[in-house]
Image 1 (cartoon, rainbow, N blue to C red):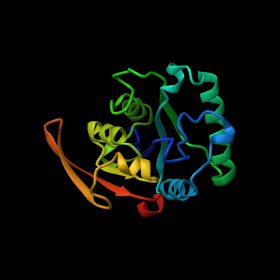
Image 2: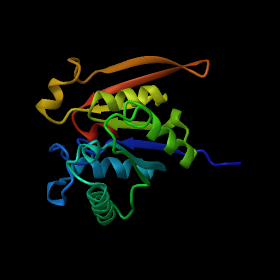
Image 3: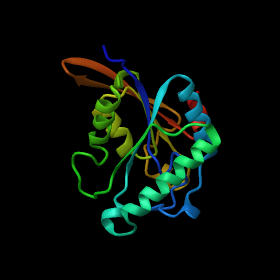
Image 4: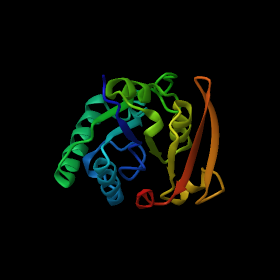
Length: 190
């Protein structure tokens, strides 16, 4: 019998680090301190820590796959220095028009679900864009958090702030209640 795991899915830019548009240089990778607190909380509850990130800057030619892998290694090493463990996995979509993996599609989530034997009903997703939230809804993840860290992000998001929204999704002939919460800091999750 396989053990069923649960996970928290983090978007990268805007959730883990400051989003300064196509972050690929170490000197531009600035962590949000509340990420470490949030990751520690979920790790203490035995959640897998998984990153799912759209990285179309690779296909656009803004940076290379090597640049992305280099900064991912840096991110993992810094997390290990601070917390004593690595993220369980980083999934990314380097393409601009990938309809299967690029969020709001669920390809990265499905890949993680299969690899880690995840129960998505017990999982969380944290993102800073509606495409992140839509990916969670499409995958049937019931616990979704939309983080609004700056004015530009807030202007592109729904007007209802600090409220929860409830969705009902038909998932394999049963209804699943999905909610997302708009927050301004990862500290609100604990």
